Image (cartoon, rainbow, N blue to C red; front, side, top):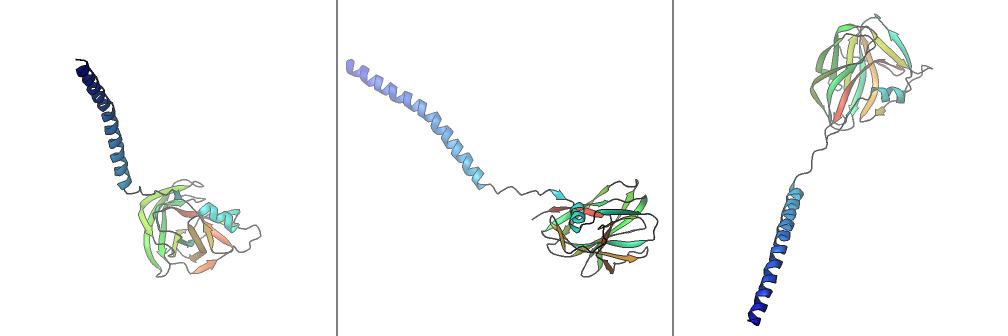
Length: 210
């Protein structure tokens, strides 16, 4: 009887140990499987913040003096630029010293001088930034584009001494090459270049995608 009691106690201890260890093994196995599943997941895509390069461009160009021009004759004018990364334009951004219910904004292919996108913007309040969301427009890395508007109202941004800015000017992921303009109310690719000022304010919200 004494030997049987000893065997029973030994068996009881063994079963008790199994009952303690088994749940721990299950938890460890579950954690291990979960980690393997996490390791096999593709990395999450990076979502980049939107950026508007206009203010930084003005600062880097030294264009800190501003004059208002209202009803001063129609021009097609804007900036030549290229993105340093692949990205997209999500919105157009404009500010005028006067109202304009039908402001025409154009994005051009610089090399072919063809229209890539035309948008009409309703500027209902003077001296107020207007942001118009547009269907995303993909831009190629290092490819040159021109963004223009046709208006008889604008802000002139220049240096205090009216000297030329030194181009190209890199503002964030956008490189600006020059300011272009041509007289008239037609949607025509601007052929004249001025380095001592920028007529605007016209810009866009850019978002890197790759």
